[in-house]
Amino acid sequence: MSMPRKLSAAGFGLVAVLALGGCAATADAPDAAETTAADDYYPVTVTDMAGNEVTIESADSVAITDNRFFQLAADWDLPVTVAPLDLFSPENPLKDSSEILNIGLHTEPDFEQIVAADPDLVINGYRFSSEERAQGVKDAAPDAAFVEMTGPEDQPADEYVVDSITLMGEIFNRTAEAEELISRFHTALDDAKAAYDSEKTVMGLVTSGGEINYSNPKDGRGASIFFDLVGMTPALDAEGSADHTGDTVSLEALAQADADYLLVLDRDAAVSEEGQTVVPARELITGSAALANVPAVRNEAISVMPADYYLTEDVFAYIAVLDGLTELFETA
Image (cartoon, rainbow, N blue to C red; front, top):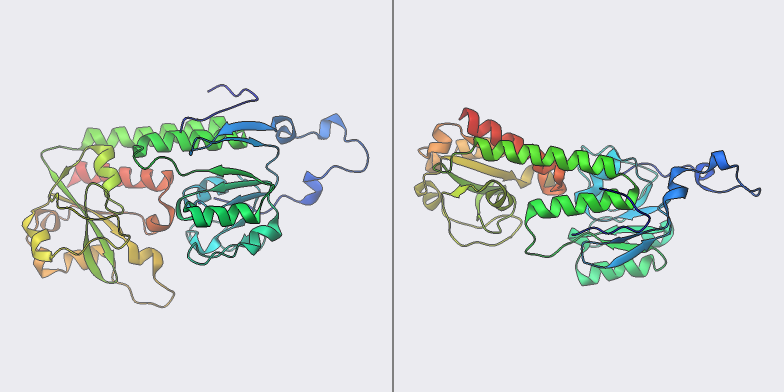
């Protein structure tokens, strides 16, 4: 994709704040050699995922609330100054950063931290996309360019990945990195599709609070995205919800579906507190007498999403799940 000065896109990762000495101009006019690529790139105009045209004057201080781009910002070494660190994966290198102000959880966000950071760019979305929370972010940073990363509800997951990563590349002048990441995603998706036999059935599950719950293939938390992406055949097509703990369906009903494969979101692995005893999803499922004769359990054809999937739900998590499905389809 070309990168003109005015850009648009069709459609939660971070680093320590850049040293002030590297960002601020001295009293004297800066030498031409000291002008950074970022200085040359901005201002830039993009179209965010909500369809709003946004002009970004600079990106020296970034607030980011959308967990789907936390790891991306870490990998791209972006100058994040404030974020909901409580939502970060333990695997994210900036989870315990002392140089990023912490908004806390989306349930009770501390917007004063955004005020203190005074960012010039906000990357907002997902758990902060409700009207009330988004307005709270805007009010805390009224002078910042506000980029909404939540797209239309009916947008296919693969289309969202491409559009949102492309947009992030446009915002931060990382077009090449964005294209490489999108290519990795497409490769993982193509491999999973090629490995899957549509005559084999798949069931999505969520383990939460030590319980085994159902994740429906239309909009259930976790697995539903991959039913759509890979074109998997549901073992059980019962109605359900998008509830983050899954839906309560009797183990007997789940067993009767005779799924060939299970795709499992282990929510407990992501949200359990330190010192809390948690039974891993695979152990919980294989230890269930009611599910013992299900083909997927009998054949150990179970793919468990990364432990931090519930926190990340980003392109990296998608790639990991797709790679896991490919291995499952090829070996089980």
